Length: 181
Image (cartoon, rainbow, N blue to C red):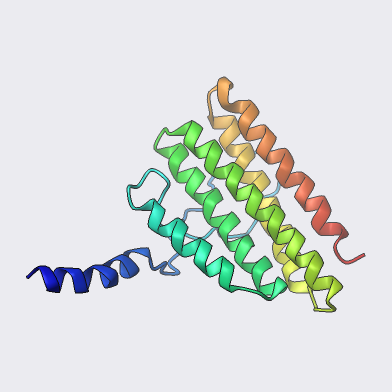
């Protein structure tokens, strides 16, 4: 019986860490009055950082990221990770785990920065980056919209953390706009 369990364990771990591309995320129902509604779907985040199995996801994501060598593909991967972590931050916010949400969103913005850097490398290598630029711009607008919404809903003591991340997203939008130059 133990041998069967030991043989099945790797498959179980792989299956649990597999990310199905199912989008169950809701669109924000009420964006702030002065911003436009951004039509950009955030992917389902999968396991959240408060899960005891989250380390498996981290190992998988690091391994997949390590195996991607093409800068354009790496930019796309990093953008996906940024969007997933932003949405994970939203889920954590809704679970009233605000400090963990801010930390997770900060990591999302780090991935976003890496995506821009890889897109710049792809451009230098002569690749067509028009599509990734459009995705970066739409994603940065969505990040700003979500972070503004979270800031408005949060307690005053957490406003600065969300505003700092929103400003980073705004700066990334400007960097993405300069990519074609």
